[in-house]
Image (cartoon, rainbow, N blue to C red; front, side, top):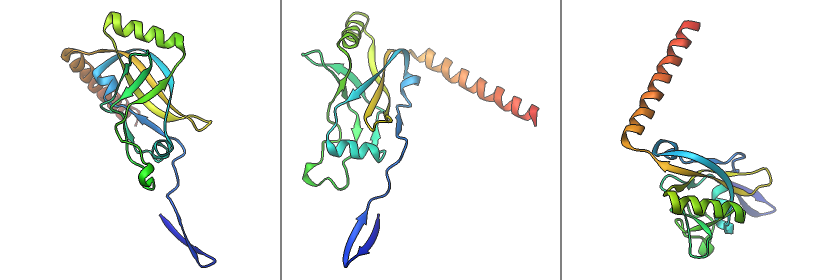
Length: 169
């Protein structure tokens, strides 16, 4: 926060908002096998979007579910309260509605109910028009041995890259 005096009055400027907001769910690709991805809009209030533009959101424990009307909501997404929100502030862990086409919603609902897949938010970003969007993925949970295999592949790739780098130097 910066304080400026102008014509005898004091003005406070908030820290500048980040240009590229890209909040990722790092656990999603480790815990789930992503089968299909979609980009959805998200319904937010005034203090929620301001908080997201400051980068104060977390997707780590969140998931998506349908309500009785067939609307898709993201549950357990943490959006911290806006520091200058007063009593208009939002709830940090409220359910937030996702915006998709009817055709996409119908397809996702069919997949979730018949095959038992789940819908996971992968990342939250601000597009070039300034709107908040969420990439969601239709996912199937990994078993413990799949997770071990993922760790083994990551370690072998890292050691191979290390050998290549030392060979080129």
